[in-house]
Length: 129
Image 1 (cartoon, rainbow, N blue to C red):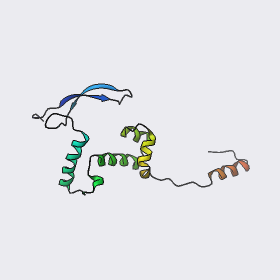
Image 2 (image 1 turned 90 degrees about the vertical axis):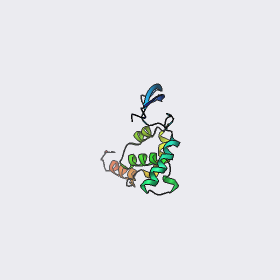
Image 3 (image 1 turned 180 degrees about the horizontal axis):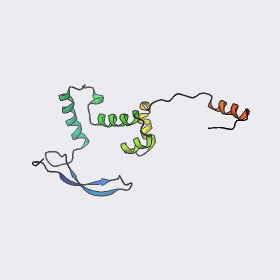
Image 4 (image 1 turned 180 degrees about the vertical axis):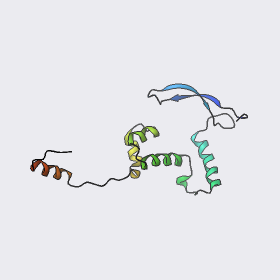
């Protein structure tokens, strides 16, 4: 770390809701002091994955595979869809759902819900919850 101290750069921070430019120290940089980009991480990820003996399947080959792992871990652990959207920084919930809908745990499909409520009403029970 002494040979490669953090490099301070300016980034846009949207965590508070509005975009604010902030200077931040980057712990991980290239040998030229530039920020690690998704491409830089992907190249490193390939080396690390190979060293670990992970599959060479293209589906798992890039940095984006880590993003999908993160998303599906949140989803399968019942994190609220809006929270998953925020964590992934998707602009809309629709994007999150269209991308990951097949990972959301399925709930038992309730059939005849309306019929049950109507029978309760007809029997004089007005509990529609």
